[in-house]
Amino acid sequence: MNSDEVAAHDDDEDDNIDPLAILLPPPEDDGDGEEGNPAQPNQLEHHHLRSVNATIAIRQLPSQGLSFQLWPAATTLLNLLDSHISDPAAGPLSPILADRRCPGQRRLSILELGSGTGLVGIAAAVALGADVTVTDLPHVVPNLQFSVDANAAALAAGSGGGGAVRVAALRWGKAEDVRALGEEYDVILASDVVYYDHLYDPLVETLRWLFEGSDRREEMVFVMAHLRRWKKDSAFFRKARKAFDVEVIHMDEPRGGSRIGVVVYRFDWKRKRAAKCATPSDTVSSDLTKHSV
Image (tube, rainbow, N blue to C red; front, top):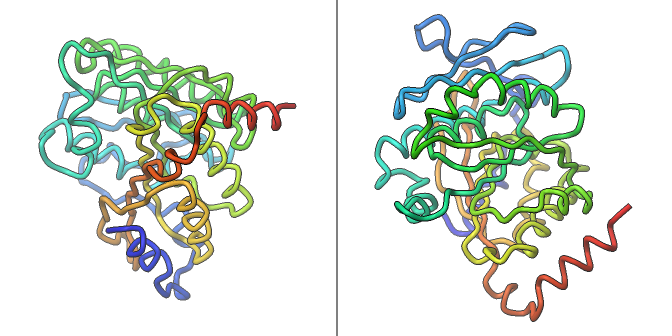
């Protein structure tokens, strides 16, 4: 879909959606009695990557809040990563990842926003043999680190000689946090990060800083899996389209009686915007300085 079609998709009538009922819908039972079942507090939950025969362990702490639970869109990204490794020439992630994993080249560098339990970022490191930075709010970081440490063996045995995961705090809209990342990225991932409208502007601003400050901005891609819950979600996409070209690359079938499924979007830096920026590095440097505390 092009940007106009995305807008139409986002603005479809959905007055009958019950946001509370689908905020964290129960995962489907796949019959094995383990994988995909909600974890109890302080227990590990296991997810299998069939493409590389690896198991990812994460810890959910539901009593600690939404950031400590596995959201539906994360499972969608996990499945797409798994499918891509099984058949790199096919699937919605192929145009994004296929040309970036050539033998002899540097490892893929990935940033995940709003990592939560860390499932997607850890799985990307294992399946792609990538260098991944998983991020979330400071109070979420200890549980993220727990999940990363729990997967040390899987990371060491991952694709292409193993992947690596770094944990970092990242508050959207905080220039000092963006600056502290100190790395260039090929791909940015996120799942179910658009739900509080007061975070739309900080999220878009953070993405803009990451792209403007990167020498790879022309090739860098932001991939976001999103389960729409409110009509107001479309406001985020209107804001994002000012700086990014946005297209839908995948749509899940609705699950659990819902009228909608997870949608995966691809965001590319607008070429015409980049052409107007004579010194984009100076622009982001100015923004980072202006917003520093």
